[in-house]
Image (cartoon, rainbow, N blue to C red; front, top):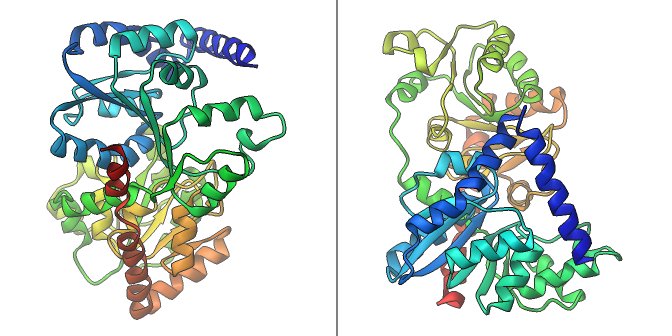
Length: 408
């Protein structure tokens, strides 16, 4: 089965190479991986000890970031190697100063695995949440390099737990320890003989608390948000979200809207503006006077959303009508109510927000209208729901220190 797995990886690598001729993301992946060995040869200090962190993309990086930065402060004898698989992670964080070396991770084929590990020579490897590369894990174990998985969640539907997934389940035994988010994951793994497991929670709670503490001051957003009208902040929205939210905003002059779409290319921004019947302005074009006379602020730049939630009274998190919701904790940490679409069940933190009364799922326009009407008409309700969301974040913090107590 491992040979079939490796063959499939070769075919996947070939498909990415072919797609690179007409797909920008595939081209960035191929070129980025091509540069990896050169980056390692040039930058790896052969006399230093490295902890290697691997994140599939930006979301996983943010999940592992508290550990990276805590190790950086507490254990300066270690250097940090950070790898990404997706361009959406690498291109945003390739200049991150919390790591000593940053590069793409080559495909999980035996030759590339050995080449990478020979050049990187990590002392410890840490994979974040959902990274189960069988050849990497097998080779790390063969070399005696302790390997960990952090902030993981396991569900019965995953390949490991299918009747035909026994061969892939062997990957889980390559980890020195798996740090999972909940008892349900630990219990499920134990049913299949995987017992090298500790329940430590989700490091994202630590991360969003740190973000709140160091939130950026955004004078333009602050100017826009001033006044008596509640501000709805919409984060990482897709067209399905915008078609739900904007009609409500158009018909409710008692609120203002800040919208930070997931995609900020010209066509999408024009699409959003075509839906709006009230005065709107893009952040990049704003002045203080103009901000005061517009009802909707469109965020047309990346990297600001986690600080923008601070200026809202209610948050809506996008993605729940597509593949799944984006980061709800970035909003909840500011103690405001959080609304999101119906596809949230794979996100434990979203279920937790619903359970504590700090978050709500809506599956259609009527549900969204009802929820928003309640929050607008009842400030006390809005405040209490926000408090519940904030408490949920604080009560679940501390995973980073729990994990480090095992690693050190």
